[in-house]
Image (tube, rainbow, N blue to C red; front, side, top):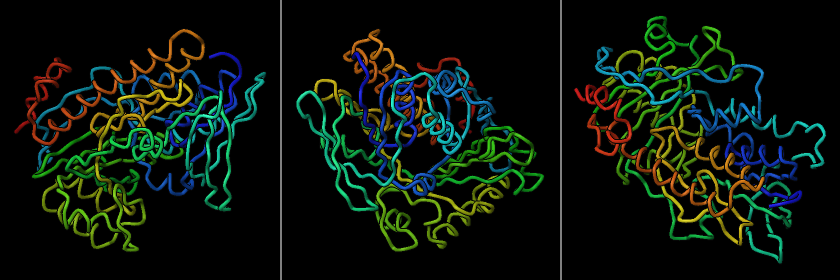
Length: 411
């Protein structure tokens, strides 16, 4: 892939931004078309695991000047009385941040002028709904709607990257049979500033990643910087995630109906959950959870709910290499291993090798498919373990050093 290219990236969340950053660094002209408003993107933001690939991309291409993450140490399991019943640690360094912090870092890096570059300034547009993508001679044509002005537009590009998330319309147009499948459980999520909770809760949760099992689910809390990146005591946040087994049916549909009586299929964004639904979950928490987790729930003002789904595409390269699927649009994982953003970072870093002539596009696709298959198996096994305490054989094989410690958390 030689010469300066006009690149359109469909999707302006982290997957799209990471690909845009590396492409801009190589001197290509980049335009991002994001369908959501900035407010809607932020309303679905959560905590974020930043594995090695994402760390590498940020260090090489973003170069932040201030802290943006905390370090994950041991993951501790506690019982309802707050007693530690087991612990295990990651097999390699792993870091914790928030979607909002990393999003701001990446977007700022993308939109900053590149000294000495011949590329045009990067363009990031929201409210742009892509309607179709199809080959047009040696180019690829993208037709889209500006949802604010209701104007239709068309652009031609040398390369299109579909980073439009788990419900990707581009993937659906290419592989309609590949659709996200419901896993049988949902996540309730929230964030609480350290200064809002009691001193007793801070003593238990400060700097730690803690998990508790209960009937039909488990909950975890981890410690991340404040949204402005501050790591000062009192400024940091506790991110919590409550996994709840919930079959599709009346309760599922009710929980995914928002304050305006709109039925959602995947996520109730922040600020849209009905108060009676959240009150019911807080009451359930008071019955089943230890006091630090109850404190977090009681101080959460804007929880959001997501139905967990997964899927994987058999291909990542289309139209003779002019259209690529990346991130969740390519392969949607369950969230237990915090692997989604690392997948996108891995694809972006490998794409640099392709564009420099150090890797073929065929090899890039094979690597992406093989990696997605491994992560699907790993994260599903991790989910099974977290729900039950039983270490599946595949997880024991993948994490042999953690196996004994994980087995100790069953009781």
